[in-house]
Image (tube, rainbow, N blue to C red; front, side, top):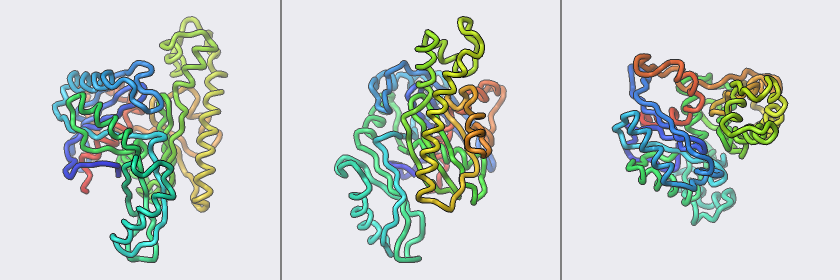
Amino acid sequence: MGFFRSNKPRGLVGLDIGSSSVKAVELAKKGNGYELLSLGLDTLSQDTIVDGAIMDAPSVSSAIEKIFRECKIENTRVAAAVSGHAVIVKRITVPAHSQEELEQAIQQEAQRHIRFDLADVNLTYYPLGDLGEGNAVEVLLLAVKREKMESHANVVALANKTLMVLDIDAFALQNAFEVNYEPSADLAAALLNIGASSMNINITRGGAPLFTRDVSVGGNQYTDILQKELDLSFEDAEKLKMGEKVSTVKPGTEEAHLHSVSELLLLEVQKTFDFFKQTNPNDHIGALYLSGGTAQVKGLVDLLKQDFNVPVEILNPFRKISFSSSRFDPDFIAAIAPRMTVSVGLALRSFDEA
């Protein structure tokens, strides 16, 4: 799925342009599975990307070039993704018996479901059912503001790379999950990708996204409150929220502050689940999987288990992807794995059949 893809997507580097860092992953097919060829990430300074908007394109393109150079990635074809308020994902049902009727119905229904002027967006759709089996077909409707797409395409081009696929963060997340966990067809799983400034939520079952939502809450809130309340530098606040010791802070002092932000995050998750239940009353969320750098914040997994009473774990995007321990330090891979989930999902687009 995605907004734009080339006719021949094979051989792609998954490039995740996040608000705090750029991540890249390159994979190869190996037997019935996959092998890690290249992996890299580079941190972005604050305010380089704000609310999902690229404010400093040269810095982002420099980070992309640095990763490719240092990791010796020769492939210049990339798959990237977008998310946030400029992206709309809707499951709708439209009357249609044929492809022609479907396309006409989509144009009519899009006016009702897209809050932007249709002249300002790129629109695409994916049927979730078969045409001709009834009077209507369920469709996943996707729209993204053109300026958002152009911003990503321009920064990739500035780094002398070619954008071959533009996906959605939530769908790349789902792709990494399905390949690595092979979930049962009846499991409704909530995938939470919690980055520095936002959280992507995708509730999926049987290979289809049931409900997606992007929320403007993330790791920066933890850092901000620790800086303010404990008079810390940005660097020390970042360490403390991830469970590292800071010499000027008495152990345990940070817990109440971390908990207060986690409660806000959990409230948004609960809102999402409530929205989901309104349209899917017969579905029960059976498990939660966390990814993104903020997934590793001290105490967050335990709070989610306590509040939602379902299995919760941090998603490992390399669970079924092999790698050479002589080329990649296993401890390093394990440490950064949650941050690499979207880029792994994007790299897997290399092997899409269609």
